[in-house]
Length: 67
Image (cartoon, rainbow, N blue to C red; front, top):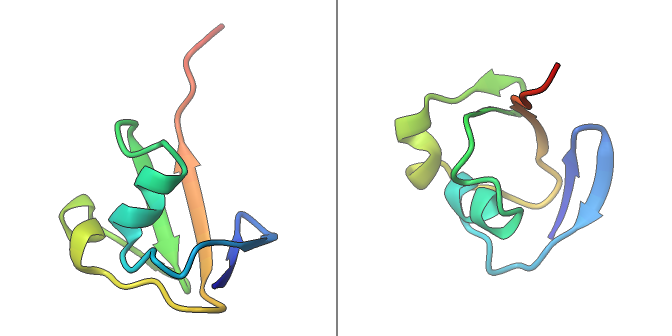
């Protein structure tokens, strides 16, 4: 499956079926993250039931502490 994540085309396993699967694959499931898929911002409770499909465009914004 080919997704565009934060402006970069990436080839990912076809076994990823939901946004939650994607976040787990990228190892950011435990962070506070805002997910936009095809220009629609998702609520956190929708990550597990929102499918990802070939050629989706996804923006992931997670917060990093520091100063």
